[in-house]
Length: 305
Image (cartoon, rainbow, N blue to C red):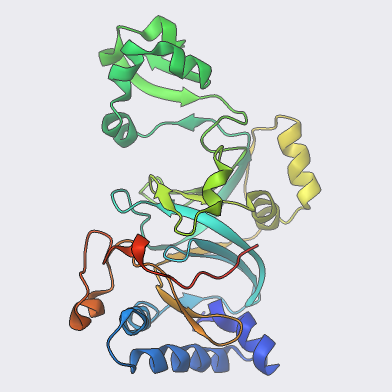
């Protein structure tokens, strides 16, 4: 392991032709520092805060790694420091933020069920809704667990205070979509497909309950397992539900970087959706509760395929 920042490595190589990770580190820092030295503004605040957050970031120089930039709503797969897959992602909203972490992928599962977290059940008051509208849960493919037994929503209506779990069956309407990538963590955070792909078209993609939805999830899942995309598709089409362990450890870093140089060396600014850029207060911008009306600012969006 080495203290380096390979997230900009591909851009650095494309611009200079020099495949040196240590030089890429300096390249990123120089560009962020130039924005940090500028007069007060959103870009300066973002650059200062990002410089603080990347201090000490560690990634392997060889092998595979997944990196999620929460602020950008982007996940990138790196192999030997080179980006090989880039995808839009939907992250947690400010009320249920995606936590920053360094972890690893534990499994890939096709056709997952979704056991609704207790926090969602309480926040959305689903038990009361079950009593009022069991048809909603039946149509959405849910079973519920009562006294250890799985029963239909119709059978459970009127008994909501005894319901321990809501479980959504596999299929296209499942909230996790057709693929789940497990992560080692104590927060119940994982990567997954979605039944709402329209969310990937939003400029600011912070609308999940904390987990990370991935647009190109089939490609990334296949890459994590070291198999072809067609093999991944076959697993889905055959209704396979086996948890498959990656043959090699794949580190996963989920970070919050509101400024980052793109392939041309231009520092792009992403929304401070969680109000973490403390340096913004020095420049008269509000900190906390999602920052300064971040949806009203003309953020520098870049195209992600």
